[in-house]
Every structure is written in C-alpha cells, then in structure tokens.
Image 1 (cartoon, rainbow, N blue to C red):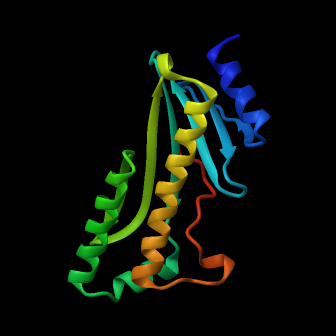
Image 2 (cartoon, one colour; image 1 turned 90 degrees about the vertical axis):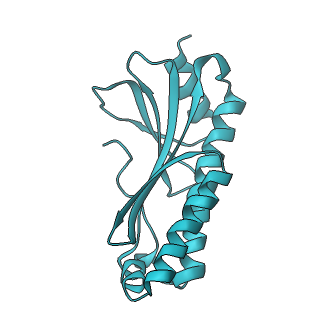
Amino acid sequence: MTIEQDVKNWLADEGVFREKAADENADFHFVIEFPKDNVMDVVKPKEKDVIVIGCATQVAPEHISLMQNASPQEKNKFLFDVSTNLNLFLVDYELKVDQDILQQYVVTDNIYEDGLTKDALFKTIKRVFKAKLHCIMLLNYDFGNLNNNNSKPHNENSMFV
C-alpha cells in the first residue's frame, strides 16, 4: 500500500476524512474535519518526504474590532503571548498581522515519512488543533468571549486551497 492510501485509510477509519483536494503542488492533499466542524489539511508536498498537517483560522470581525480599540501595549502583549504560547506546542505558525491586529493565523506541523504511523499522524493532528484552540482561548481571554455562532473564529476555507 502507498503512503497516500495508508494516510487516507487512517483518516477514514477515524471518521475525519472529508475530501481529496486538487493541488498541483502536492502528491496528495486531504481535507479533514477534526474535531467536527474544524477544517484541517493533510498534505504531502511533491518531491518531499514529509507530511504537513495544517489549520488556518480567520479571526472573527468582532474580535478584530475589539483589538482595534485596545491600547498599543495590549495589542503588543497579546501578539507576544500568542507567539510565546504557540512555541510551547512545538508547532510552526504564521501570523497575519496588520497594524498590530491579528487577522489570521496558520498552525502547521510535519511528520517525516520515516516516522509516519497512524499514532504519529493523529498525535500531530491533535497538537495542531490544540495550538489553534489555544489561540482562540487567548483571544477570548484578552478581548472577550463572543457567544453567538457568527462571531467565533472560523476557518471555512482550507489552508492551501
């Protein structure tokens, strides 16, 4: 069996496989839902011996508005806290920041082919999700918990599409 088939089978067995995405830069690109309603990507870039697990999150407009009203010190402390905390998860991340306001963030982690097992895959998926969730908790702690469904940070679009 190929790596692609193994990974797809593992994802399907656990009920998280959603679809295969067209991606000319990848040997395979799977969109998954882990946990339910949280979109993530599992990608094997072309000619690489690595699987990338990633999750992109767009910050809710209501949180952006609250950050705009925060002091420069509060904004800087928040961005520092996000970076510091994400580093504790031992993941890679990219923060899209405009005028000291977090707009979007992408959390990723890699598994090299020689370490690829179902256990390693799901531990990595969980770590990426927990890192993303931690950012949401920091947003809620520093700028208020938004209770309606339309104002939660969301990621309707997958990371690479």
